[in-house]
Image 1 (cartoon, rainbow, N blue to C red):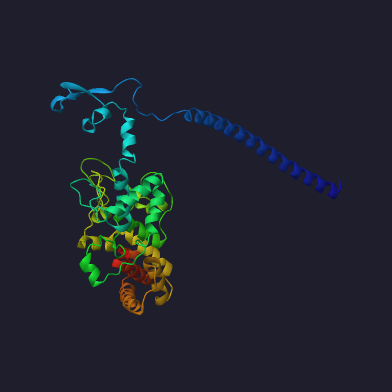
Image 2: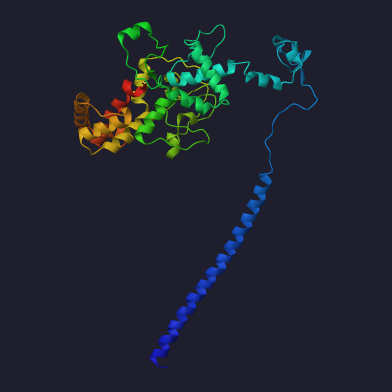
Amino acid sequence: MTPDVAKRIGEIGSELGAINDQLGNALTLESVVQELTAKKNALEAERGKLTNVTTMVLRDKVGVKAETPIRERGVFLTPGETVSAGTPACLGAGAKKQHMIWMDNMLVSRDNPMTARVQVNRFWEQHFGTGIVKTSENLGTQGEMPSNQELLDWLSVEFMESGWDMKAMHRKMVLSATYRQDSGVTAELLERDPDNQLMARGPRYRLEAEALRDSVFAVSGLLTQKIGGPSVMPVQPKGTWDTPYSGESWIEATGPNRYRRSIYTFIKRSAPFPMMLTFDGTSREACSPRRIRTNTPLQALNFLNDPGLLEGAIALAKNVRGKSLTDGMNEIFGRCLIREADDREIMLLSGLFERTRTKYAADLESAKKLCGEADADLAAWTLVVNTVMNTDEFLTLE
């Protein structure tokens, strides 16, 4: 056997070995495919069963009148007079003969403008801070009179004629000349209309709690844009949920869920989210169509020190770290206040930056506690951002 033949036999053996390995892999792959196919078929069969499930609803039986006894003194063991569903007697004998759907039709009838008035008044309150009727929760005889009855009626008619198109009504309000005014005020206007009920100037009011929190994450680039989904548990002060009655605990969200819009924040009535409660949010125990805005020192302390809001300041500080003071200040002002910083503001904040950087350079452990990194520059920028975010210009819609 010549060396060339032996070499060739060796090459053939190697090739056969490789082929056998591939065959083995193919057999293994086939078994995996079979297993996965079986699982797929089982899941599809299960999905087919699940898609046949319908949502359970409660509705009246045709031809059967819903009746129930009045429980005397509220005791369920002592049934009294039997009553049935129907329209209020105060609406007249004719109404009592109608089907219950009559009530629904009456609410949105052109002969009953109250529903439209209430709704457009609440839209107005959302955009201008105060409704045309200040007591948006009560447009009845015990509420306040409209500041402009004709405007309220016109908006109500427009709303009904548009087919109750809410988006169109919001667009009409925000594109109006009234909404686009600036909030500058003269001494004469302030004397004639101190509360701006006649809208001679643009609205100016502090944002609601949810909007304030979302604004911090929006300007810092952290806000999660996802829509829908379950409630989340963002950062809040430790111990808020400490309770002797159960083992429940607040498990802080991570990743994008940590910075979801405030509307998705988990609400516990006995322990509401502290930041929102401080800024006039409610515990949700009762319906609150209108929030009364307050102005307290606790709000300033909360916005300065809230751990969740501080994360927003740190994120924006990281974006400007390494830039010149002027460029960094202008980017912060551009994001937070939609304008450039003037010379005086740059001078004041530059002084703050230099003082805090010197302080943290001598105590890097404190810098790490503040912003998570032993970086004096980042800590100084964080305090500058935090200061701008606590200005009246950032907190107020104008």
